[in-house]
Length: 228
Ligand SMILES: O=C(O)CCC(=O)C(=O)O
Ligand SMILES: [Fe+2]
Image (cartoon, rainbow, N blue to C red):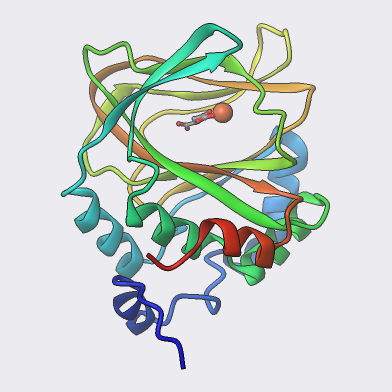
């Protein structure tokens, strides 16, 4: 018998989280559907259960973030601090969201094609650093929907996630201060763009990622959710 080691998983299992919890209140599906049709996004306050949230917040306290520039061909369109790609915390975050029950509910609310996997990262914006991301679409890599999950305990100003129709001046929806555990799920399509405005005061920390049509979960897990 082969023993694999997921150092944090034993703790997570005690929360009875993995593969059992869907995080979305299914009595509210109809109102989420209506919100999504109207605004191309849904706001999910208290999406992440407290135990999982406390666990992620505690681990985040020990992480050394690294500066990352968002690049489009050779031009920069954003600057942020990122949890290093090989950090086990990213595996935990992705394990929580790669949940087929959650995928089904998200498919039902948004009418998107079947979700194969969720690929995510964790980033932070800090005051005085011009941290933010200009208008962009994230239209690549089989992305269907994006998610932003609040993972910070500090207040902030600026750092707004804004959504618009491509090329338009009108903001369809914007989200300022996010509380830890709150999530936003929004549509990725050529007709839509979003941006993260520059952080003015305080600090903003979020998990972000994309629900993607391909590859399927088994293929994704074998490549990205490996034991370490
Ligand atoms: O921080 C956010 O809410 C969204 C960030 C974003 O658009 C991205 O990472 O592509
Ligand atoms: Fe984005």
